[in-house]
Length: 397
Image 1 (cartoon, rainbow, N blue to C red):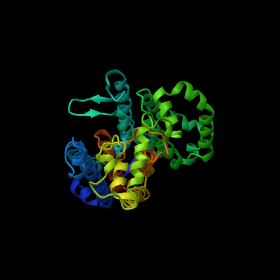
Image 2 (image 1 turned 180 degrees about the horizontal axis):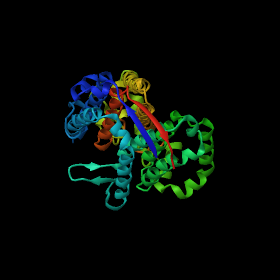
Image 3 (image 1 turned 30 degrees about the horizontal axis):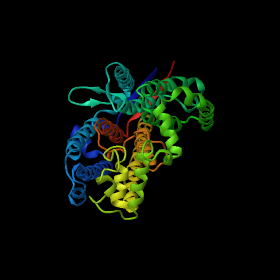
Image 4 (image 1 turned 135 degrees about the vertical axis):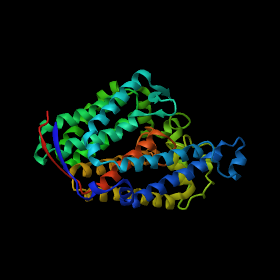
């Protein structure tokens, strides 16, 4: 394991109120803006609950059923962000592996007592909320990898010996998530982990070897590793017109909605594909499509600008940090946010198979949103404690 010696400067003298004032408020305002956009689209989606299709075209949006439920989750999310941010960063260093362990245990529990929904067993019913451990695992995995790599020298990181343990840290939750089955989340965990490995200093050629092995293994994965419905998604991705009214319906309607928005869109509350219920899952997986229909390419460019601004703030926090843990944590969690958005956007455009990944802070949901706020709270914590110096002498495995 590793032996961390932590010395603090200004941040060690801050009280809770001072830390609150010292936060990266640009990032917080951008998150508030993105969450508000999501809330506005969910309000618009509510009008599709009309029973009369003509009335849906001329009626206004509704807080019910999605926006009214999403608003308190956003408020709770920001509370989580602020609470996480004011903790001492060395607490997250100390308990990173414990948090990872909780995530793994939760994934194991899902296999035995998990709640089944939409054909998958992915949730734990806690009474007051249905908790999806795989979403929490995205944050826990970045925490664990950041702690591990922060304790190593660049020469150790480039040694195959020191990559065995982090590879196990990744493989364990990915394997558990695939059994649920949840291919989209497993892909996200792999992509985010690869980004953390890369920014930690792992050489390019090692990624190339893994990709080559993956390509060679594709026939075996296709035959034995994928469920029939997952194979069907990939087939439809290659040729959506093969089953327009069946398996290809979702992506076909998504493309129609995207194209019908044009450059400036049909206007807020005026989307026809979504309001006439042609667009499926408009409140979750396909909320970006609904946004594009109402606000067009111009609105999408503004949304992309907000996403890029959030990523830039994560980048700023990372490179303001004087310790490797803060750098890796901020870049890794920023990458997690980006991968969410990239997979969802590429999915609804037909550039990736439909895998059920929500759009971050836009889609309706609980666990995904709250864990994202948890992650941004860690980024803010890294920003507040950017002057923390972490030196380590490692003796792994």
